Length: 79
Image 1 (tube, rainbow, N blue to C red):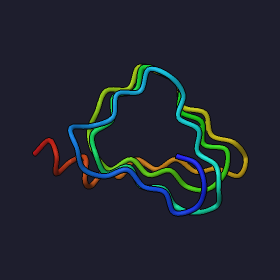
Image 2: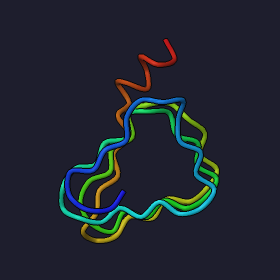
Image 3: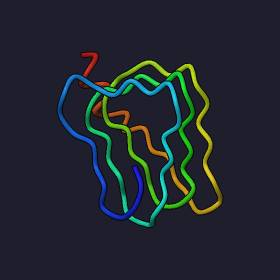
């Protein structure tokens, strides 16, 4: 997700085997399940993951970035 105000919603989910690069100051929510075997880099702004998924790849967060796992929604997904 690049830029301000981007979001990923709906669909069967995201299968990332490459690189997701988050830039831009705005919040970018991912409200669909995501499976990450690649790399997620949050250089600037806030990347919020709100659904369950499998994550075997690394997450990197730069000094200007924030990565949020919305545990309440993850709990609801599994309940």
